[in-house]
Image 1: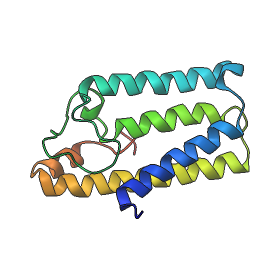
Image 2: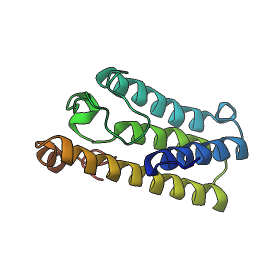
Image 3: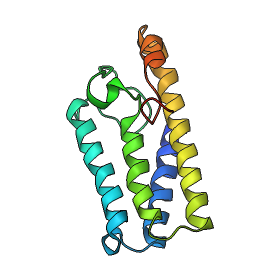
Amino acid sequence: MIFSYSKLLVVLQFFIIFLLLILNDSIFNYSFSLLISSLGLIFGFYTLYFNKIGNFNITPDIKKDSLLIRKGAYKYIRHPMYSSVLLMISGVILTDINIINSFLFIVLLIVLYLKAKREERLWNEKDKDYKKYKNKTKMFIPFIF
């Protein structure tokens, strides 16, 4: 079975997350890790409030009838769900900061960046106003990146 580029990125994303989860202690053993991961989870639910399930897609491909969201976190960043994932996983790697965790986190960041760039290219094709939206927002971190 041959995966599309989008599906390959999703498989890599979940594989890296799986590795980080099995290689590290539970966040429930560390208050600070639990706090950071919880903030990421809360931010993810907040984001989903504005991006309804029917509009949401796990791959960076754009659904046929999807709409560009510009409310909530989307007012400041274009990929808040990826930010949420990165925040949750930050809590996980804080249980044991080491070279393997750091490497896997960087690879996860690259995979999410590639997903985001693919999604943005597709949005540029679908929505003529996307370029304006892109110029007003950051990719993952409000006002920074």
